[in-house]
Image (tube, rainbow, N blue to C red):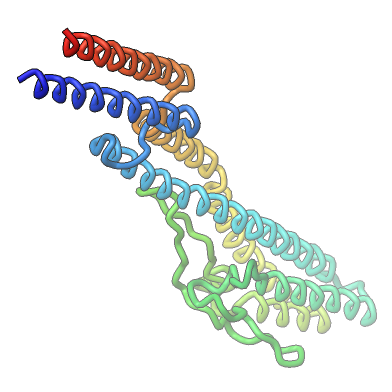
Length: 298
């Protein structure tokens, strides 16, 4: 009976030593890594929480990247629209200067050439691309919205569909523009045709033609400024959207940290307790074995 009891004490002591050694090793690993969970089985519920929050962080990060991309694209678009507005204003000024009977043929030709130059500037601007995407071609944005053969500029070659990019779970932003709607809209002629007709009218001293051109330029100016206002409104909204995404990310990362990580002070304290428990188990095992031997000798 005594031998059975002694073996039982030995096994219990050995189990205590192994258990405290494992706890000490786990605590050491927590101190070294800063992580409370070394594997999912340590705390399945917290592990699931950590995985869920990591997925949420990844989703938010994608929206944040989309937000930055949209901001970059729209800033380019805004600059191009400003250039087009400036070009239209120049054409208006030149056409107005040509609306007089006192100009010589050479002076009319000079004004007409400047209007032709405006047309070229707008052609270059409307074909602006950003990272391989033509910003003014609608959704058909892998090819330029307008092409040119000699001095003749084609009709609009894009489409009226607009590419939208999700910048949050509930918001999307347009990152392309319907160039046809921008330069023609519901007018009978597009802006390039208007400028051609206007240059011809200036050369001929055709006041009626110049007046018609000026009216069409005003309509084009209104279309472009309206488009720029929409772009500006989106740009103004992006910082607030990004701030919300940043807050969502911080909150999710806090929840992930609470599920997966441990504070250094807490980890060191736990390691100290585990070490003391291991030392106590070893000491208790030594005392037990000595006592058992003396009892056996009696």
